[in-house]
Image (tube, rainbow, N blue to C red; front, top):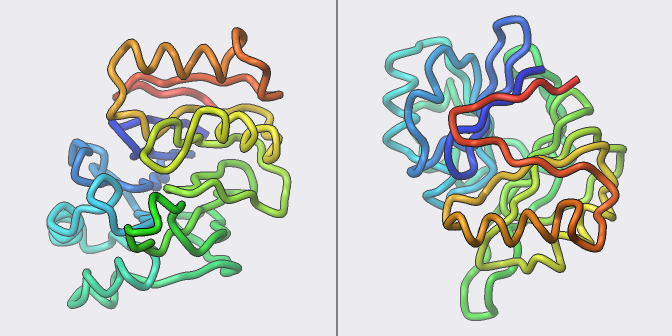
Amino acid sequence: MQLTKFGHACVRVEIDGRRLVIDPGGLTDPQALEGADAVLVTHEHFDHFSEATLRKATQQNPALRIWTNTSVARQLDGSSARVTAVGAGEVFTAAGFEVKVYGTWHADIHPDIPRVGNIGFLIDDALFHPGDALTVPDVAVDTLLLPVHGPWSTTGQLIDYVREVAPRQAFAVHDGALNDIGAAMVDGFLGDNGPGVGAPYRRIPSGMSAEIA
């Protein structure tokens, strides 16, 4: 499995030419969708979901399919044959990958800010993208895509989250708002200089790939 990071929260997963893209939002280079067979969207926030980008992608690629939650699917009304709404507990196949859905809600930011729906995706029982939530699947996770920075979490919560999920390895996502100093600070706490998360932690530069064995 090849994992390619595209900016903030978007990644592309590829095996044998099959391409699955997760969360191509408003901060994502549309190039991430080139050659994609399927798209997964965790929730409606702009950094994870761009209606214009997905509508254009479906026009350019008639075979492209999208799986997401009810709120995002509603915003893509008019492409209903191409968009499938899914929720926690459902299992489906996208671009040849088996996908299991976990979670229901975005992490709480503040009592005065309404929460939106958020679902996480477990790909081939191996790779988990939680979106903007610290959802713990009820199965073993090989590779965790860890949202390392947002207005809804602290580094301490991330340390405890990785320990609870107990993946074999973790890769950083959701880090587009961090400058180099902030990224280095977070990496230090989650990496070898921190209190320990129980799993190797890595950051993939935008546009670069890593092989997931």
